[in-house]
Length: 251
Image (cartoon, rainbow, N blue to C red; front, side, top):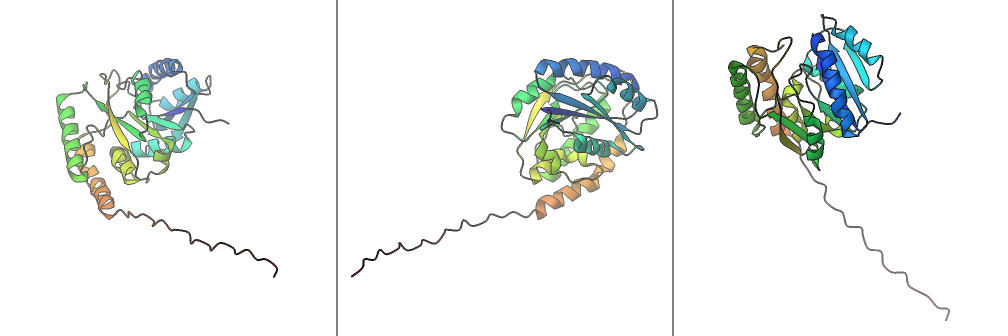
């Protein structure tokens, strides 16, 4: 089976009201790109019937592929499951709450160029002020500790070459630190402004503890890896020159 050009990986937990409008909008945007694609919906142990619904709609279109985690395992686990199932040469992540704008995908593909990964940042966030403030604080702390300048590492829209996701170290909280993890492996990472929309249905799965307290250990671990990273270059060896063969004549 040939690889599609693009795999879109979307983790879901209790997003049943958003699934059908998400697929309809995403399908139209992806078809307009003129590229082959697949959409992987990774259900992270939903209890509201999200899993049954994605099975129903995927039964009519092979480009839509459902995955089901046995129990709620977290966003990092759902993304990893999607990455491992993805067949595309390029992999894009987004959330399933309709706050991401699928019309940004074409611009991200055009802007990738020679980069290995492109990280979105929400230029105008449609969230509550406390939520925006917490996110801004978390980004400043990450950049300070990791010595980076990523504007919005929590933005769910990220475009990556396949080699990037194949290099990832699987740990809970990985999804918050993807730019740093990619750079640890020597990949070139860029940033791009993307749209953001108000949430229509459902509620966020993340509170203050998940945004500020739990990631601290992960952040320090990645900083340790940065400082202890082994870097070396092999010396170019010069092949010895063989003496020219002597010609002989019979005397």
